[in-house]
Length: 140
Length: 140
DNA sequence: ATAAACCGTCACATTGATGTGAGGGTCAAG
DNA sequence: CTTGACCCTCACATCAATGTGACGGTTTAT
Image 1 (cartoon, chains in turn blue, yellow, orange, brown):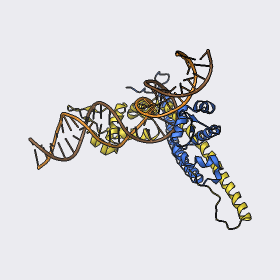
Image 2 (image 1 turned 180 degrees about the vertical axis):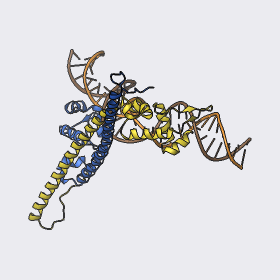
Image 3 (image 1 turned 45 degrees about the vertical axis):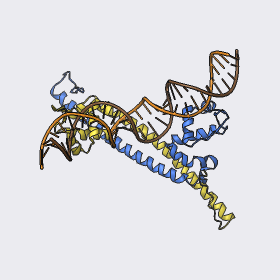
Image 4 (image 1 turned 90 degrees about the horizontal axis):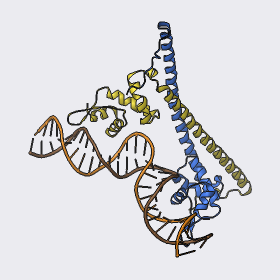
């Protein structure tokens, strides 16, 4: 099968298929005219590549273990477990960071709401029925 | 104060200070010779910028509310609350995504370990004391 | 034989914040 | 008056995966 058909059948752009080849993830043979020729298995290979990229692996990391997992079960590929484990650690770190940022923002939101509520209460007691809402636009 | 001093006092590179200005986050005046001249308050302003960038805001988003929060308390800036809330939603989504990737990987690790254990058990019973560990390197 | 639909390579654009460096003014101390 | 330490602007490089387009060859169908 030629590159256009593979692209159609996997939903991956021709550009990306050529890129994967450049990164050592795919190895089509060449026809006499120079056209790339893919085996029917290439469809599953490409889906597998997409799957791993979706898990957050880079093409470079993928190059290190894709070949093995395409041929054998994951459990038989030495390099896979440490890669997965370090990826998990990396994800943990990212999740931790994002969570702490989120907490920080939530705390800020809470204190804004509280402060506005306070201000609102004071204003209502002091100055019933005025128009201003006590906010400022960003005056640039 | 000139840009070099501000850079030293904030730990932010000269390049970044100029970039912040380009993005509308800082507005130094210019001396007759064209040099940027910063007020002493610029130190806190820059620290504030770093803080918000660290929370994951882009300079473009920051440009929308920095001016107000530098002058007033956050609670008095209209634009701030919705920005924070949408940032929180975005963080939630990212955390959700990363967590699901993590779960997927953890499941894979579990099944690799289980499968190896099984293989190990079988091998030991059948074939005591052999050398091979039953693994393949990535044979490229 | 010609047009349409393929394929090939090469190379630049994208995103965001920052690094780096060229080429050139400015200013203080010696 | 020179040296060194500043400052200026402009512009290209980085990271990763992908888009886009130019230019040209090939294949297929009319």
